[in-house]
Length: 147
Length: 87
Image 1 (cartoon, rainbow over the protein chains, first blue to last red):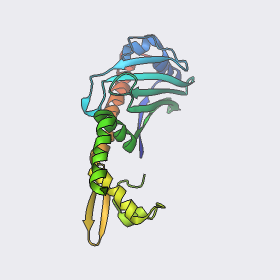
Image 2 (tube, rainbow over the protein chains, first blue to last red; image 1 turned 135 degrees about the vertical axis):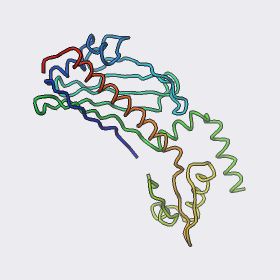
Image 3 (cartoon, rainbow over the protein chains, first blue to last red; image 1 turned 180 degrees about the horizontal axis):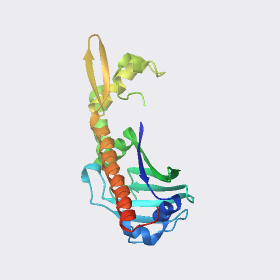
């Protein structure tokens, strides 16, 4: 059960302008809030951003990014992970920006996902309850049923 | 994933597995008691439905990030207009 966020936004500017906005570290500081580290459009470049935590989603608000693919003027792909604490991820997704020249401007397409149902629920359930609790609970149920 | 948006009768589910019908029933009962699925009776059949709570989480994540990205794309739009880049 996988779902993706798909968004498009048309900018009446040429593709190289939009590409620059997505990859130039100084420009990213101005509109994308990427201020803690100078962005490098290179595979393997990592950075982190902080958002307010969302306990209901089992998320401490930290976003871990890593550049995975760079096709200049066409595509920028990075991984986007998050979870309840550092190193523990219940959100493991990919963000793909695609630039399409159109009508004298650029259509910027974003795909973010996959947002998986069962796995994520199970992962966050387990992390919330801890393995021990789940085992205890299932064990109790099994005993009641089969003894 | 056997269960999705539609509920499935236990008989229909059992058809997909190589274990006996009573064994399938036992597993389903365990899943129900653990809170992952709900069993409802309709006529002569019993139906399984996934417990919606876990999947609302997906919706919440997606709603949150959809807004997050829209804000970013709008921010880029505003930035370009403000700084008079050549069209």
